[in-house]
Length: 91
Image (tube, rainbow, N blue to C red; front, side, top):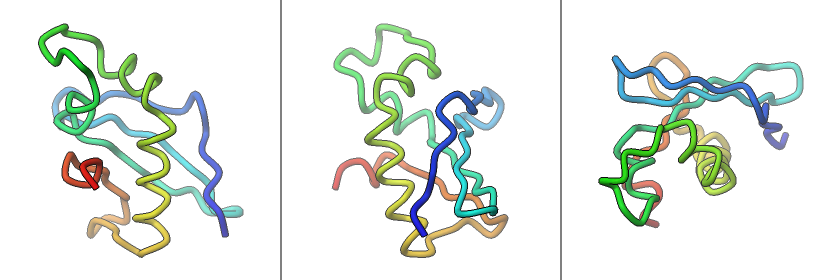
């Protein structure tokens, strides 16, 4: 099945340095996250100090595409989360 992302269901966890977002695969909830380093790599001026939520909103489509590819390839963390890292966005 194709992932269906929840457009407004995301939160930045400063302690873990990750923005958490969610998708559905049919009735199944899929936890996803993107690292702070990955998000910062998507902005022209990383020193601008933009909030991670704002960067995610701007780059959501690209991050979600990578998450969907990793999900299809069954690339999960041990806890079942799909994590998008900086190296995933470089491809």
